[in-house]
Image 1 (cartoon, rainbow, N blue to C red):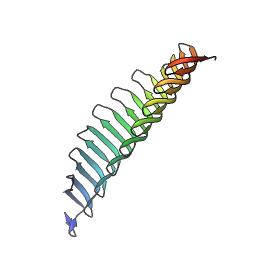
Image 2: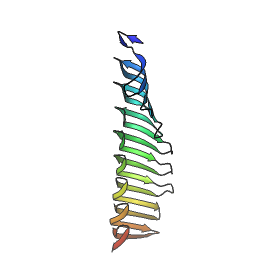
Image 3: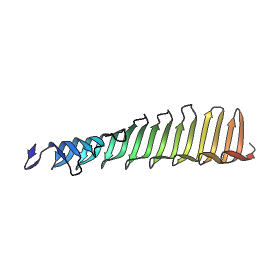
Image 4: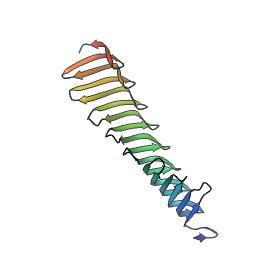
Length: 197
């Protein structure tokens, strides 16, 4: 459809990069609701501004086998969304520049779950990690590693609470097992000094 010697309000085109678009137009550019096939590897269906996916929509990446449903800014996952991978892993939460960033929850294909803070696609900050057997860690993470203060509970009769370094008890902490509480200083998972009380 043409209006005033230009694209009208709806149509289809192929850009210089070979991306195919069909949908609403304004001044010859994709704007409004439409669908675009990008780089022969993904499809975006949703909102567009100035030829770019921008707004709410659904990305389907055929090459990397994932589907994203949520907010997009300049063709990148940005804001709240849900990302599903082929193996069954699901992330629900905040994105920034195509990466997990902010608050979110990831459910892994093996049944494990993490809910908390993310930065640069990794667990960073405070969070809760739950294993498929019921084991639970509540505490600090740095780049997917338990580091800082936290508590790991195997069950109601067994837990460690205290400082962590590189995924192991390290620093001041206490270990509870079958009614007995052991307090002291730990080093890479082993107690090196005990404290009374």
